[in-house]
Length: 292
Length: 284
Image (tube, rainbow over all chains, first blue to last red; front, side, top):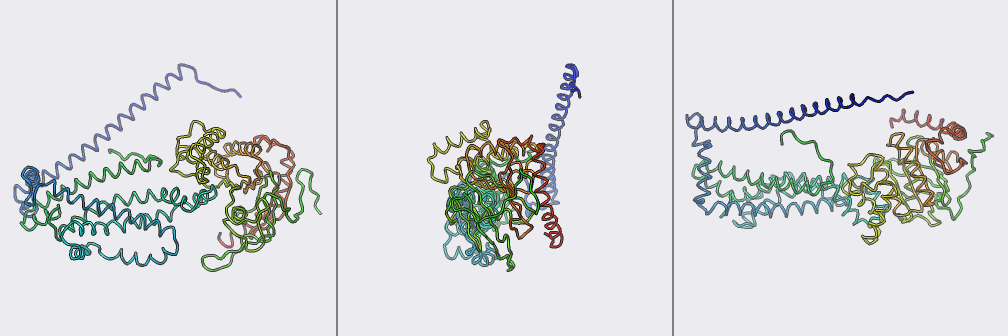
């Protein structure tokens, strides 16, 4: 048996060809990235351009379906001159505050209930039927009940946001607790953990990725709860802005408020993602999505 | 009467001594399946592990090998018979016990050092002391450079090293291992077996090591328990008189080792065949 080793010049040539291949691969990745971004922009421009043109030539009636320039003018006038109910930032602030309060209360309640029921078989078996029933009620309808009971102020919107959030987070937290790895629990037990230590150091961390996944969805639900609550009856907020615009047949106003809400939701979604990455930094990095 | 070669002496089962590290005396375990049937996991099971002894349990799949370990931890209670650990009846999970699992049971959200420190921290050791000991144990299993790594960043063999450190840091007098190396590749497994024997000879713990790999059992053990196809009971017990310290990479070419393995395999083979044919009939 003889070991075969390449000569120095062969090795150098091989290194050079590998470097060249890597450079080609990197260039290909960059080109593809640029292509994806370019196509995304092109679609946006085409969509807005066709909408605007359609509105100009009355193919799309701007009275019903608004137009990009009209929406932009509406947003601009809200920013510079304020809305009929006061400055725009105040409307955004009111809606965000309701959303946040509802989100926090609903999420914390959902997590707590999910963990308690997930850890206790009997409670889970008893309550599961009621939770199914409560979950099948169309919850937006509860908004009317809350307005009657809690009035036009902030409480009724927060309450609606809470019920929108609670069940989503609860279901995920419950599932997460149930899916906690049995070997891991046994390991903690034998290492000397008490039941409370097991809940704190094994159950909650392993349910965390389920809970965080539900927070993404449920923040959107909290926003829907707050806006629908305002829509049904309020003195302030983005929902009222939409409802006022609707009453005045102002399609631009409805779209403008919708876009502002979407931007708010995207910003918070970004913050939640940052929070998630911070909390579960132990997870293997996912493959990067192309172009993001 | 079959004549046993010297190195693999077949032992007769006697009632366990009172001061043995582990004494399982005539235990039968039945449990009710979720659909309401009675299942016998093990029956008339007797096993003694002396202090500092390394015992291996081999048997066909589904014969209740892992059940025996859970009887010792107290996670399962015998239907009849009794289990004593260090002379005391098993009532709760004993602080003297360490358990290495087949599956990865590390906490993936904790770094290596936090995983290893978990045992002392659960048991109320002050933080500074727990981490100091953890650092020491990480060094002993050769992972000094990986303290801050998370389990998913380590290879399977390295994760097993963390699991060993996590278990040994509690200085268990009794070490239970449930096919701990079965998921590792051949080379890594050999290295880990050597590592385990080193740690064991330092710590003088009593070990019950469950495996389906007869050669692994013969190479590691002082005593090998062969179980029958389920419901499991002890078919025979062999004393393995290979000299220590043993080197895993070499021992499998030792003629004495081969001879012992052959003898025990002859005993085990019919149980494996029985287990297989039953498995095919019932679809398990």
